[in-house]
Length: 286
Image 1: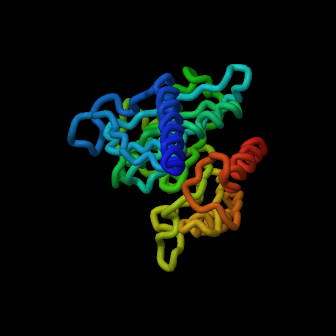
Image 2 (image 1 turned 90 degrees about the vertical axis):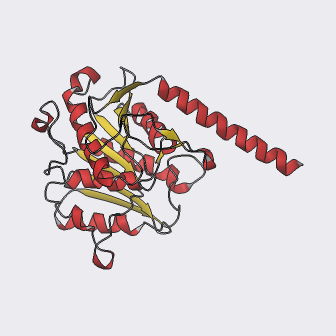
Image 3 (image 1 turned 90 degrees about the horizontal axis):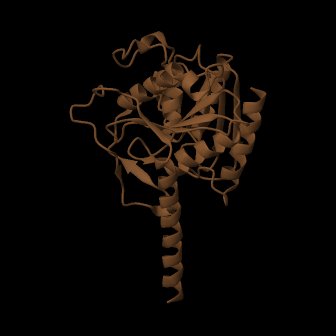
């Protein structure tokens, strides 16, 4: 009886947390990044699907066919003129849209950044996801004055698969991934800085070396990396940091002994509580 009540309370609290973040996000400005047809899609645009899995009090969405940026603005007294695009993780199958998206955007705005949560295409659309991030970077640059970031830098932060996506955008910005829209090829798709938090899939080369499509590192941006030794994807951060170091790209790596994977920035996990403090200091020094 007591155990059942505890489970009910946990479920109710999780549901309330999920609903509060969804309602908060719905109150933000949302921008469809593709004005007309979405490249690579054959069907019509549709709203994403929220999965029934809310374990860990996480809202998960999938079936993204109409990629969207949700805009989070800092208080005018705090704004620093810079911006960050947030790429949630989810194995390129789903997006942990609140834990690794909205909550991160709220943190960034508290530091003075204008934040943009990207709903990139899933499931299993890695090429299309890169199109979405490259297009999102150009959309933000094209409308920078509107969002008060015209004189600032534009970075990316990604978690797990979102970290993979941010690394791909950092190293493949020189290659067009989609036909130009509204002459956006005139705008750079290179992020000015990148933060990769427990990134995955960066060590898919031979003998767990650098993933081959990340090899164009000569013009990669300064990068912050965070991982843990007990993360099954932990080697990704080590390999990518070494590759950046070899090419003399400014890189900062933090590697804790434990923390696991997919912890976001929620309290109760040392890794989740550590990386935002370290990242904030890195952003200030940058």
